[in-house]
Image (cartoon, rainbow, N blue to C red; front, side):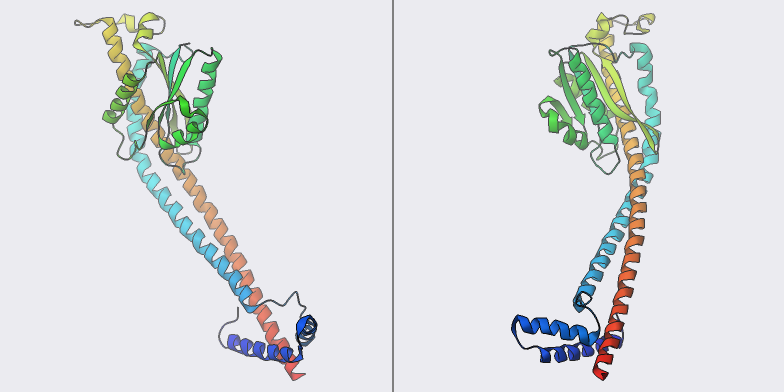
Length: 337
């Protein structure tokens, strides 16, 4: 749009030209059609090129509002990236240190994901917040695949979901609402600790009957890479009955008055708590890495969109200025003629 003294001059010329045109109009549809012809012949512009003065202003305002909203989104995504980057390092150190808790149990009690059992719990570890890529979709997809695999063994198999995290629940309850046995939410409001995970593990063990537990979570590899992982833990009764599964347990001597059944019971519960602690830390680390990458991509996309909108706005503004100059010159020429 024109600025300075050009704008008032164009408005005066427009009023004068509109007044001249109105003097030629009689009334009704014939007058309107005649007026269009007079206006076109007077200004030298076709009727398609004639637009109200406010139309161009409204179009520019829409682009400016869009640019303002994109800038706000860009600030938010940049801040979220910085927050995720600051949290990532601390959680990553805790996750790497927690791997030494559950790894010895694999050599001691074994890991048999293909063991066929009648009652199974699928523990799905997800996040409470979104905007973190596809980490929640991946664990939900693996959980559903495990459920279908257990269904192939027979219709009498009892399989239930135990969900940790709001996003996993939101996806699984769409088609498996009746199969969700337990749910834990808002687990990351405070820092993840072993006490919290052991309490959750104890509640799961006391509230459900199971022969095996399969825990699905995302294992952290790098900021841009995570791997969906399944950890299998058998019940103490199954460990006691299957000597091939217990690994090197028979090579150790049991001291004190505890029997082998009591030792297996304690080891099984401690294994579940340690595995859940590591799984929640690994998944939280993967969440922060995925959110950091997602927000970086969003910030870059917002910057590209802002560049395109700026170019569009400048072109529209230049076209508006050129059009108004043409109107002024054409109106002045018509008055002189």
